[in-house]
Image (cartoon, rainbow, N blue to C red):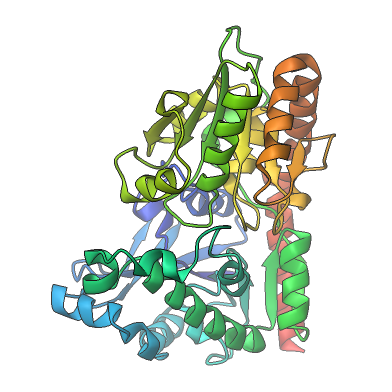
Length: 421
């Protein structure tokens, strides 16, 4: 069976498996797929480096899809509204050439937000969309409570008023891309997902499509450390979160909760945030809106896989504060280690956590509920450890590599068979 992947992440080719935010999961899935003697794999990825050429490495053939790099002037034009007029066929001819050369039995497209998604409906080869983020729902949850477009219009800043590449651009961009995504859903015939949420969105926007449940492979280091969590023996209570500099990832919820913990409890705590730096404009924006005692928070920036795991294992609890998410790898990885988890009950997260049994779920923007659960975990560490261990058992089954390999191979075979009828 010849399988062609279309991914903005070039997997093992780029050796980016240590990305803190889960970017290495494509490489992890690729390593798993290469174990199957039934699969002949190729991967097409977008690059602006003309030196990249088609080549075979180990068991994968790589096809670079060239994208002309933008100069400063063309970038500025793009920020001023060029994103509204993106050529839908920009990669189609290159992708058709790849398809003609490799002759795949099936194509797996990683995400409808993928710039190569416009190949949908333009080839006779069956394409299954591996659902990742869903832009239209993400657009709906873009602005946290208390922030809106006017927040960024005044006072004037170079980024928002001159360069036009700030949060207003990001909002307009995700809105336009979300509308395009809805159009692409209509062309989609086959989907791979893993949560009740992405199934429901698929059934709403693409009722004609067939849906296949396929769980995700985690980075190998987290399998090595799976179930090794123990309650840290120290007085200070350590809370850890992993977020990116994305406005709906919930930094505001963290800051509000820190304020409550400091003023309404006697908890001796430190909140570690992985993925952002203390000097970033992103942090300054939210700390301006939610001033706190800086001694209670520690920004660690981007960490590699081993550093991330070490910080998680040194924590009392992992908190995922996002306003929207499908199945965040950060939650899955923390759960696989066995750490007690508190997460917002948004998107697909309820498919990962059963409240009170394998973790705790709170509403979005719920600092009081979050502060309560943090205090409760600090007061009942053994009970919380048991819930974290139950989460590990659940994650161990969900991310079982052998089972996932069977899931994906069965999906491939079923799609190829049904497509040929």
